Image (cartoon, rainbow, N blue to C red; front, side, top):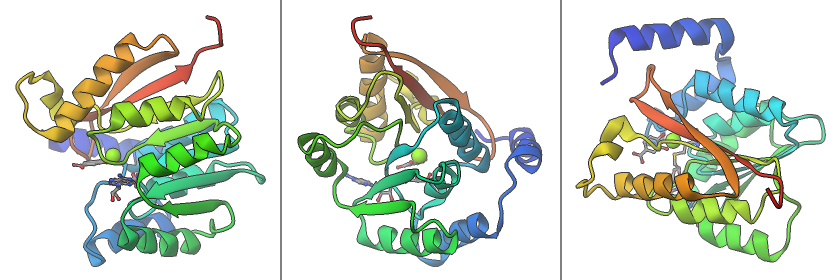
Length: 225
Ligand code: SAH
Ligand code: DHB
Ligand code: MG
């Protein structure tokens, strides 16, 4: 249900506040050239991730679902000099395309791609007791979003921001009889989020050049609250 007006307003905002440079434009082109899906966040959503990073002074960022590295580049560019992004991608071809794009953007020192299943890598980072992340962006496969979020909490501290993409799915979340496993995954996730007392959360709907959708934004509460 993307209308012309919503696309034009999205472009109006991105022309003002989130213009793409050559590195970002070439990621979008690389997806078509390499046969990857156009599932990247929009430019305005990339800028939104940067605003969230600046709001919490993010130095350590974790992303689930790299694709061609479009969101990763927005995240990487909002890091301080000593900051880093770890981005997890299961598909080796996607990871290879993303690595080239990240290199082209000059971010190879700050961004590391971990190739593997997100849940396996999350579990091993929890077992290793890695330093908590400041911001976590969940954007991989939708059926295990609930489990990804629970694992993300295990890699968080009070104040960590967790953002989850695609939790409205063109309003298909309203259909209680949906048999789409992606829709069912985010319906289950949204119900869990509503009852989760460890975080303060909301969902922002996103209308623009991409499909009508939404992002969940959660902040980890102080302990004992
Ligand atoms: N964050 C990207 C878009 C990610 S699209 C951007 O906005 O630019 C979702 C990605 O998640 C795809 O590349 C897909 O291969 C990856 N993915 C799917 N299942 C996964 C899993 N189990 N573990 C890690 N990545 C997964
Ligand atoms: C899909 C995944 C995404 O991360 C996205 O932003 C849009 C669509 C999908 O799997 O359909
Ligand atoms: Mg997404």
